[in-house]
Amino acid sequence: MIPRGLCSAKWHLDRIYLRTLGSLTGSGYSLMVLNKAKYGPMWVTHAGPQTHVNLASAPLLEQVMRQEGKYPVRNDMELWKEHRDQQGLAYGPFTTEGHHWYQLRHALNQRMLKPSEAALYTDALNEVVDDFMAHLSQLLAESPSGNQVSDMAHQFYYFALEAICYILFEKRIGCLERPIPQDTVAFVRSVGLMFQNSVYVTFLPKWTRPLLPFWKRYLDGWNTIFSFGKKLIDQKLKEIETQLQTKGPDEVEISGYLHFLLTRGQLSTREAMGSLPELLLAGVDTTSNTMTWALYHLSKNPEIQAALHKEVVGVVPPGQVPQQKDFAHMPLLKAVLKETLRLYPVVPINSRVITEKEIEVNGFLFPKNTQFVFCHYVVSRDPDIFPEPESFQPYRWLRKSQLAAPGVHHAFGSVPFGYGVRACLGRRIAELEMQLLLSRLIQQYQVVLAPETGEVKSLARIVLVPNKKAQSFQATARVSDGKGEKVAAGPGDRRNPAHFL
Ligand code: HEM
Image (cartoon, rainbow, N blue to C red; front, side, top):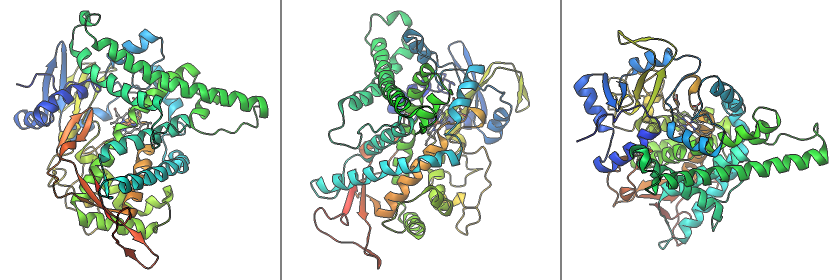
């Protein structure tokens, strides 16, 4: 039996809960589909003393989102806050609310939120993409068959961590090096530790904390995450100080995001130390899983992949490196990412608590502080909005295209980055990062599923991840000699078929 409160609005914690449930059932979200079939697009669940109003249709999501106030509230993030309180740390964008959240977002939005601001990081991201491509090529060459890479999801994870660290802290942390530096390994381990142990501490009563190991492990995980961030911020502060001493305040050039936040009085050091680790956590699984799913579907759909390759090399010929301006001419690339996020919304359930006023939804009046749960996973697979919702059809996003699938889109049918002033802070960075990497992969490799690979199912593991055991890809490197593409054989030759496992 599946416990009530499955669809509770604890944005972070329930996704962890669903991880447990997901591993038991194969897919925790099927319950939402069943609930919608049974009760319609709106139903109530209870989790302890809390009542949640679940919404599973695009018009209902729209009604709530459009009525959110100046300071939208997702949920209380109590467990995260407990750690910050114990350690005397400032709250970050996930943990803070109200006017303080507003001010914090105002500071953090700069140099991050707009596409033109994200574009400032193109060179930095391309540097990481270059290293990733070299790393991949090396892994292929070194594999026993000369053409295999094991666990692409893992490789994407390290790519995403390297990329977001470089953007946020302006430091490379060696994720694509060998061996990976010890403190980077410790950081990755501590993220796992923190998430795994949150499952237990969420459901165990507080009195068990001194008796069982979970609470301590949970706090230890967080502490390592924050000390990793602190070390990087301290390094940056030292650099700034040295520059100030040698050059004087007017001559110091703002180098990147952290430098900007710290020197333009946007954030105090304490606020930066509280916020940046939260941004870092938000920026890894999200993009890496989306990349894994995109590659999976492209490998299953060779004709879409071929069309994408044609589009990419039509704009950026082999040997050249994509730039942000190029993506304006790559509608299919964008559509592939949109379709991937429709099928696997990284945040499959989200929520809003409307604290400021009563609101009317679906003809009913709800009191202040009602917790609404957005069932994005169900909505983005609604056949009324997306015909043949289970199939991967990026052309559905290209309305003017002849290949565009028929169907009536609803603006709130797929909102993978959320909505409004509390929407994803890293959206533009994430999009750019994924576009730069995916275009380069497709420019250089042809990816297919390995014959032994079965259907890959989604597993609710904090974000929707592929069931790795069933995940196996093959790829053929594309090489151009200027007269057209060639495929050649021979161990270590990048034109060999390569397996991404
Ligand atoms: C595929 C990539 C990503 C997806 C799909 C995604 C999705 C989301 C969603 C759905 C939310 C909640 C929005 C809402 O409640 O309306 C969110 C919040 C957030 N995301 Fe992302 N995200 C991605 C990547 C990133 C990256 C790379 C960063 C790093 C800068 C980031 C930072 C944040 C932060 C800080 C918040 C909290 C914002 C707030 O509460 O004010 N995200 N994201």
